[in-house]
Structure formats: C-alpha cells, structure tokens
Image (cartoon, rainbow, N blue to C red):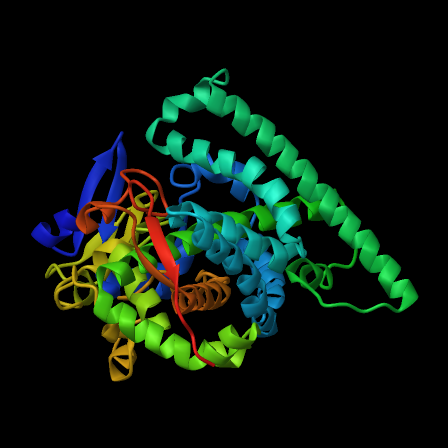
Length: 445
C-alpha cells in the first residue's frame, strides 16, 4: 500500500473481497480521520481485529462510545505518571536476566528474550506478579494464543478447523488464561478489602489503581478488567519487544550510533553499574540518544504498519485536504487504512527515509516533527495510553543493556539479511529473530 501511494499519490482505493478500502498516508488526511472528524470513524472490529478479539474482548482498544470513555478514564487514572517511577526498577530485574543469559551463552535470540522480558514488566506493573509467577503463567498460556491469532490473519480457514493442534491449544490456553486472570482479580479485590479493614497500605500497581475507581465488583466488571489486562499484555508487550529488537539491530548495524548511545549511557549509569544499584526515573530521563534511537526505530520499522477505521457516515473531504485538486467522498461503511508505515516513509517529509538517523528526533529537529507525520502510538483522542510506560521501559532496557554488554550478531550473519521483516507477524519483527553474542563491558565507577 505504501509503495502504491508513492506511485499514485497520497490516497489510493482498492477492493478486498468486495470491501472498499481507502489508504491514506498524508498528515492532513490522517489528522482528519484520527482527530478532527474522528467521531465518524470507528475501529474496524469485524475485519482487522477479528482474530484477536479473544484477547482484546471488551477492552479499551475495541470499545466505542460511552463504554470507551469510561474505560479510557479508568485506565488513564491507572497509568498516571507516578506509575512510571517504578518502571526502571521493574525493568532492571527483567533485563538483568537477559544480561545473565548473554554471559552464559554463545548465542541468544534477543527477539524471543525481549518478548519474555516485556511480559515480566507488564506482569509486575499491572498485577505485581513476580518474574516467576509471570514465567509460569504468560509464556505458556498467552504466547500460544498470539501465535495462532497471527496465523489466522493470513490463514483464515484455520478458524473453521478446531481439530488443528494450534486451534486446540488456543482454546485450551484461552480458557485457562481467563480463569487465572478472573481468579487473580477476585483475590485482589478481597485483599484490598482486608487491607482497608486492617489499615494496611502498600505500593499500588495498575490493577489497584483501576479498582480504586470501582464501587463494587460484579461479573461484568471482572470481565472488563480481565479484558483490559489481556489488552495491556497484547499492546504493552508485543510492540515493546518488537521495538527493542529493531532498536538493538540498528545499533549493531550502526557502530557509530552505538558508540554515542554507550557513551551517554555509561555517563549516566557508570556509578550504578559499579555499585550494583539501580538508576531512578530522573536519571533515565537525562538520556537523549536512546529515546531518539527508539523514535527513529518506530519511524523506520513502523512495528504496527497501519491502523484501520470504518466510516460511520459519508465524509466529504474538501479540496484543501484531499491533495487531489477536488473533493473526495469517503462513503459510509468504507474502510480507511491509515498508513503509519506510509507516512513514516514519505521522502518529502523524511529525507532519505530508508536511512536510520536518530538525529531526526533530537534538539530542534524534534520540534519540527509534524504530530500526524509521526504516529507510532496513534494521535488524537484514541492514542495509546501506555506509550509513556512503553517508552520508559524500552529506554531503560536498551540503554542499560548496551552499557553493560558489547553486542554483535552471532556467527557470520549478514546484517542486511537479519534486517528482513517477517512476512506476516504484526507487530513487525525480524524474519529469523535476532541472534546475538555479547561480552561484558569494563565499567569504571
């Protein structure tokens, strides 16, 4: 779609199995769909999210109207800024396990390790699960569901064959995951009631903050909280893991940028690495190269390449916004594909878009970025609530990893081949993982 737009203009239309689709990659058009006329565009639940509804359920991603407003308010309170204070500590525990594994093994697939790491982070941040609890529950129950969902996007006939191994495992794991989460939610509610009676206070996680806004717990609320947790797992760990994988790949592929990131990271973390202590949030915020690397990774690789909407009514786009010299009508029930990858790779917006250049997101360059030309977390009222948590998690994980370990591709791998995207998995990941070797860095206090 992005290539079609490069050849035909900033808006193209085509049919998929009789469904009319309009693809847009122009900031003005994207802003119209996501902000100025966003009430006319709902999520494309019936097609785009169909095979992931078993995970998303009635969570924030898929809800609309008043239900979305209530859910957004609930989670925005839970994801308020002070929850970020704990992210460096939580992430440190998870990334330290990867560092320990790198010290013991000749080769480690960081793509897979990051998936487990980000599950641990969201498990602790959302539910106060220990790493052991997270490892015992989510990899065995959650990851098989995601794998089958991804397969069904490209092999939709699989949904009609319940006897397939993947289908049976999906059903079994989904039932068990729902049971575990519902049990956890009810136990947490009872624990909070006991603590209130006894006057006990403790550090609150995302679930506690959600429950603080709920007057009473019933089956519907339990189901809502369960689906919100599953949504956080899907949105909060897969995209963060993919982002970390591609960012690490780009640093390995660009030694000069790696040198800058390591230099800055050691300047901030050197004393902590030597003393075995953990940086606080304000210290992590002092970094400039790592967040720029992450943003440039999100631009170049666009781990989620598009987002889909459906027009509720006809939308007449004026000539000033269409870019075609005339009005354009988006008809009712038409699917609109917002080209995240497309707008991130427009050469008239991003000079040499295939070149990895973190300086695009540093200093004055950052200030000149059009908010609707860079939309990895979507902009407008339905932007990603967890983006600040994700960026803080990945910022600390990446900078701490490279400050401690000198990374290289394992064996005789070709850098270009390693950078090939998987043909169908979303969020986008390397086709064959990211197999690396590492040696510890010598760090002075």
